[in-house]
Length: 215
Image 1 (cartoon, helix red, strand yellow):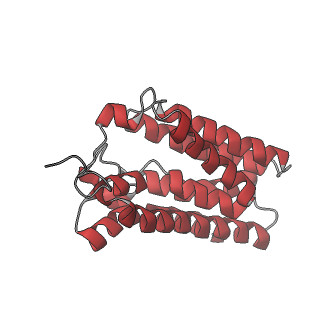
Image 2: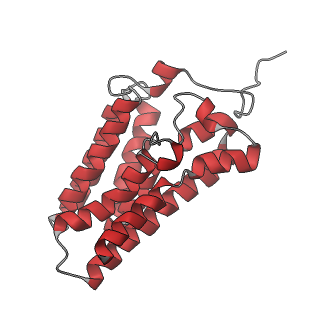
């Protein structure tokens, strides 16, 4: 019963659309009106620059981190917990973000919450491998399909987790997390195309430097 409760709590933690809340609270804008209508950090950046994206990123990361800690606490309290139950607790906040009931089950792509969860359960090396791979691709290969970028990021995360010799249950958590992320890429039709190519840059007057060149 307690395990099921933690899975449910983690799903609800992940389902809180902080990027949307931040956009409305700080700028009075609906970030889902921009770009691919994704209620995540990237559209917060589109809608209001770093002033929206930074707090949104922190809160989205934090909810994943807290959920990851709850999953670890569940395992500490019950070491005999089945691997798939623990993996479900780890993936629950990612699924909650991607399919939040607060936005008619059309949530974000779950990148920031994934960073938070894996920072909590695997430590900073795995999380930095994922984040670093994503950032490097944005700098060197920005037009690559989004699904390919996140796949390479997850591959880097999984490789580091393997090198760390983490228990087999982490493989199950990795698979479930990866499945949610790919499903979200399919939902936003960016499996074979990058977001900017499919939906445009989405830059408005709130974007830093967006007004450059105007009379």
